[in-house]
Image 1 (cartoon, helix red, strand yellow):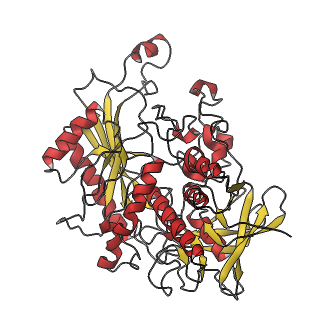
Image 2: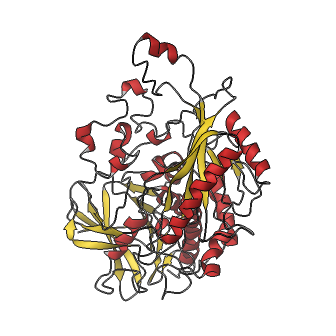
Image 3: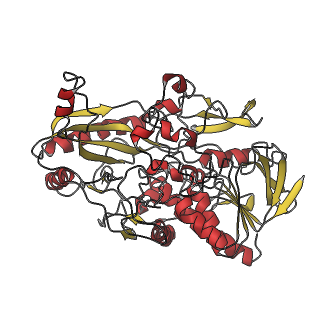
Length: 559
């Protein structure tokens, strides 16, 4: 078996892995970046990015025969002709659903950084303190002040556009100029502010799309085709941002098609000595050695690696001594909100395709507001005029249809709540060694559900949305309450949580595995609670902070 040595190994090349590679290489370490999927080159690898809808065989839709082959992807927007090869195909890499769970995975260089929604919000002091104050799960081992300078650091480099609002539940950051609400959104925002005495506020989303050039990246072109990859570098991804920075140092080795099967554990030193890698193409096994290992393979996959490591010492795997490895799965529940028609603006329209919407920060269980559930939710949404694809059944086809579509349709507005899910111990994943994927590796069994706290929250998510729209003069308001499967938010978190005590957590305050302090886990697996905001910015900040600590500890010869 071949063995190669580096200063550091980073597993996974998505948002967290890209940041780990950048920070470690810039601090002088020779880094091996391992990705289980194929390589996608910036610009040249975005095969669909410059195509018009008329150049796509099925206009982005997927034929029925192909839909049948993707029983998970077809549950949501993820089943799209143009990005079909960007998502994992279930027949190759299955998983067990003890209860419905939508697991949307991106195994390629860049991971889901090429596919994410780019909404970028800081956790607040309230988010870090809530578990301790409410007696939920365990306390975070850090506070907002510990992460604030790292939020600053990653925002400046990634490029986050947004407005400063001075809201304690949604801390401001280092923003590029904000995008602009459209005319209807401004109208509704003013009505909401007035009706609710500024206790509820509609703002433009804080998004990782550039509104001004940054580094060698161009500003966003308002194409709203981000999920196809951006040839302009207009939004943050590994390919456009962190990977070029890491490559520039001369300290990075990137190896795609590399499935990490385990962390190699030295029982005498109580340290990791490296990782074992299965080549996804040749199926040959290689050992790579390093002083430190960063697991950034996405929440469940990082935990899968831990569960499959050091099983001769701990039957449940490396990091399982507390009994918490694999537990406390979280996501954000959504698919509840409201929508309606807006009158009086038919002489106004929009310019371009803004890849962003409005955001209404959390207002429940904030300040003096108390509900019959804990935590809260925010809203994402937008207003627009219906376009050429709107249904005009009575016209059908031909000249009458063309004539009807010469003018844009009416204005509509809608919003969807994103709510926090508490970290319940019994929401968990485990290795199912009776079933394997195409490489003969054990698969995950996932057993998660939302509970009473979330169900009560969903009631308010719908009612509050309708109340705000009706108060703003929106017509024909209806509450939308769609089906939610756990995982559908694509914000899976937990399973290797941070904590203050090795008896109740997997990681310490610097994201180090208690039983192997030279192993760091900085993706969603590390989360102790989930807040109600999109988590990716927090992963970036935690990763940058952990990388700085790792290098400092190496210099002190503590690792």
